[in-house]
Each structure stands twice: as C-alpha cells, then as structure tokens.
Image 1 (cartoon, rainbow, N blue to C red):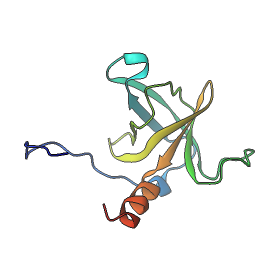
Image 2: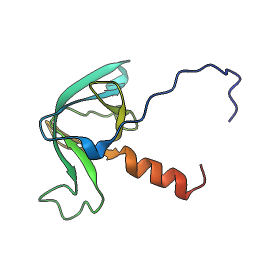
Image 3: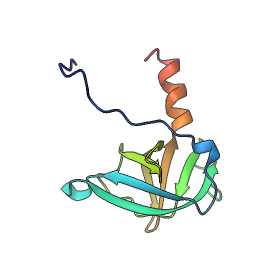
Image 4: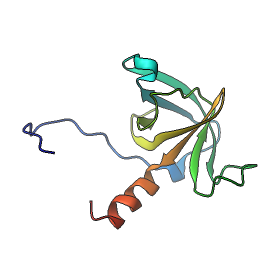
Length: 112
C-alpha cells in the first residue's frame, strides 16, 4: 500500500499502564455503519480480565458499549491519546481493548 499524502495527522500514543479504575476512556468507531460514533465509560481494569480464564493476554477493560464496527478502532483517554485498540465485546456494558503497549511490542517484534 502506498499513500501519496505527506501531511496526514497522526494520533499521539498514550500509556495504558497509567490508567486507573474509574478514569474515563472513549471508544471510537463505526458501529453498524454509523460514522464517527463515540462510546464513553470508566476504566474497570488493566491487565488480565478477572473471572475469565479463556482470556490469556492483558486488556484494558472498560465499562462502555462496544458494538460491531468498534473493533480495530481507537480507545483514547480524555486527552485524545491512544491507549488501546478496541477488540472484544464481553457484555452489554463491558468492552476490551488491546493495550497500546501490546500493540507497540507486536509491531516491534514484526519489524513494523
């Protein structure tokens, strides 16, 4: 893939490790084709999801509504910094995002 544009905006990376329970995060995406939808809610946990032995990697768990179309979109803090990538819907008011530190490690490991 090639992009001709040179001055595209980029998102600032934040730190999921610094997130605290209760801190507000926002999930951006296009659920069900609705462009630019935002879902907001508090951080519940950062790390291994409690009470779910099937999930073996760390996530940002947030009390917000993720819907099909949010997956792959950014999870940002209130300063607009990327703290995760929206990934899983685990309940009506609980969503999981891969922490930005995991994404950075994956990209580093794959020479991207």
